[in-house]
Length: 251
Ligand SMILES: [Zn+2]
Image (tube, rainbow, N blue to C red; front, side, top):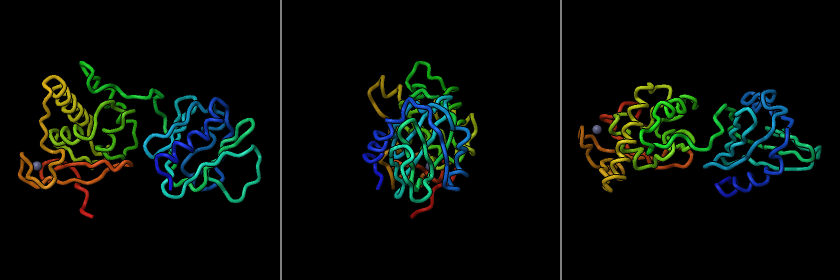
């Protein structure tokens, strides 16, 4: 089962193709629907890294292919032209070797800045507009709480300040980005920046949500809820009474 360490192993195997121009095919029709091989074909593979439970393959021109292996996916590196049995999802062929993705249930191609980290939330002043722009480039169905922890979009927000800033901005972590306005994104980022700077300067953290599940919300009295969110299943805290958006139903 692909946990973090096996993803790191897959990333290491794929390093043999880094720096090469690769031919790209999507023999499996489901993969062909997700990724246009023509867009990637002939581009140089710039890097492969494991991030959370994803493998990110960066191609020249700022294109990033995300491969999430779920329970069944597997990357294999073989000699170029080796016999195959079945239809791999994706084949990247270099001069001497080829990488094959078998049963890769999540494949997604996006254009992203290749810079590793987003703007620093603790910069003085923080570049909120650039952070909003990064969040806008994400998949519109991505949940706000999950996206706020993505260090490539905004660097520095952890699980504590995610919970606290979303509560102050009165937005649910379960809102999809497509249902959040730019103004709301800016509001939650400004709250995170303000809270984190305060904690940095005063050395005191005013927490009302983080690890407060089951207690009454200080604003509306509703019971604070918690549940794992995102690929890494980090615990999200929210008040269904006064944070706008879907509360995820109880399991
Ligand atoms: Zn509340």
